[in-house]
Image (cartoon, rainbow, N blue to C red; front, side, top):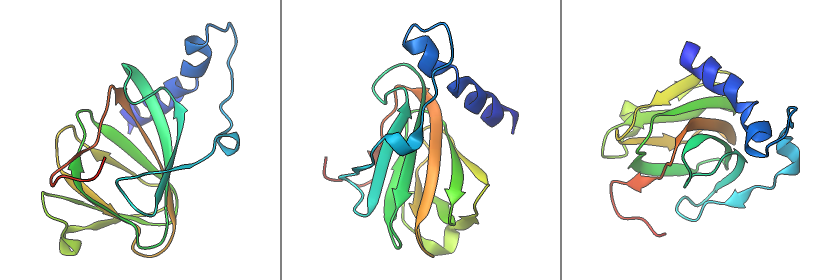
Length: 147
């Protein structure tokens, strides 16, 4: 749990450092709009810290409508996912298999190691979760997905 705490703690410093300010600059998530995730219908995201194509710490928030599924995919970096509301179901493997999924409830964290295929599902209702890692990052689907 220490690496997650450290990453989340450092995330508070990144906005002020990246803007060259001498004091912390808060990121107020409610002021950042969600945008649709084109490769995952029913998913929306908002970037809070950093950028996916840049080196360094990043943090973004996802919102999945009820029933939204992210097909098997991986990332070049390890991601730490914190569930803010709802229950997110996650499984590991190259095929979406509901029998291999585990419920990650509100307040829990799961880790998706770099380059390990995994899949997620908002099976029981809307889910909001936040992801943190060290970029650059990407989402590489096991099967080709639309851009």
